Length: 362
Image (cartoon, rainbow, N blue to C red; front, side):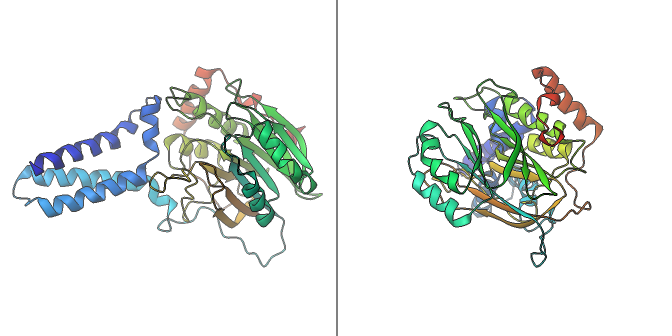
């Protein structure tokens, strides 16, 4: 009996581990990219139960544990880069030097949430230079209007469909545009952020729709929005300071996020440091990194921090970067097949990187 239960549980673990290998974009396949940490825990629990309950006197018992070890190793392979066991992709900044810095805060507010005062208190405490708020409707825009004294520059797109977006900035926003790159009701924002007279940063703010039974049946729309931005910065990330940030509705270790990094050449400051699990703020056992900031080699990390919850299902995330170009910082290295895969996905949706604004080239 106990052997049968352990075999069934191990079989379920194997199915949950192997399904994402199938490159089907269906939501119920792609969403299994998310809980790799949780599946590691499940594999460890199973191994512990097997060690207690099995005598390992039969080949089947050894096989059950071997499957669990294999699943654990495979799931851990994806998430270990987001721990201190991995080398850091982005250097820690020498803060004793006087060099330009930018502090960016991303906050998915959860449209029905009405605890705007808590978010405004966090903004006043941490004083980001650029604040991007997601899922903001007209009510949220009214609540955050008082920030304009400190954040005189803004891009606004209030919507009632959970995809409203606002960017609030102390720094001048040049050539700011709102675009609907893939879906007609899902905006993205693009601007040149003027750090000083000599330095401006191209910034892209994204919030693609996730694959889910209540949103899109497939991950295609989300994947394409990330890849079209990756293609648009591909040839510029060596020469132009670039930041891409927002709630990408994808985890840092997914195959598509890795493809985004390979195509764009942008760096992830979490690699070698921490996961920064920003969702779900209400359920500690269901957390993964959905809110991201990627940047070109022109920056080194001052700090990355998950801020306290404020009533949303997301924690806000704060990242501070110092402008200190280090070309030796390298992202994941792409191959020709990665470009082909990205081109195929963009072609199937009829989306071109030429549709992504390049505000620094106006």
